[in-house]
Length: 331
Image: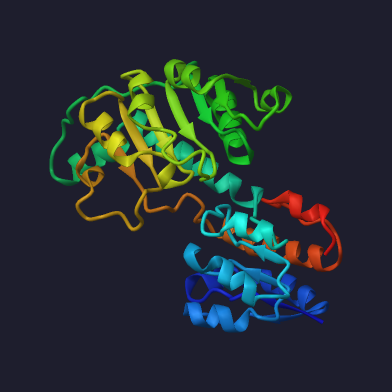
């Protein structure tokens, strides 16, 4: 039987993912599955030598090729997340290892969190709460922003961005603009969105929400130049990956009131430094990378990851492949 290494979560997350154990038993009928915890890089190397599929190895990029050379039987890396920026995709592709994330199962959770941030910022909810808890009543810049009939701009309109678009269109009657060079106009239209170049999206939108993966092309794609294009009444939200946004440029835009406010769930450095200027600003709502942290999302993520490994072992085409070109080669 082929071997699978899938370290199982502990603590609170183990309780949330208990339902996925049924799927794990189905995988064990066709593979030898090791779910014990791994705590060191050395353990990852030692225990991956003869595995066929593995879940999210925590290996530094500088050691990834060495790791793949050691894991001679490895054909699949399956994440238990949407993000895959912790995996050296180029090295995996060279070695013929397919990398899969878990696509749409977290999409609804992240989309709801995105809208929670938009509404919080637009209606000054957190700012008002802090003032009230401190014994006050009035807040500075008290007038909020209505969203109905405004323009929602999306940077990326995949599963998450599409859900954000539909909520904006149906709940708030918003017009939707989207920048996504990998999406055809017909797909954008399914979400009621019109594709446009990035500059147009930033200039014309009242709310700008980022939903793009972190790649060399998207790192710092939102910086000073882009913030200068936005309306002074714009709300900016990022629930994708921290390094997509130049955090210093964001802080400068907020400090100088170049935009109305921001809602941020992801950061260039995580955990965020205690000295980060974002911690002290009143016109930003920050959350600790929790947009996907619902019981439903985590349960479905683990179920999706396990079943995708099962598909691959059974010779079926896996879902959510990041480096699809690997699938054209023989296993």
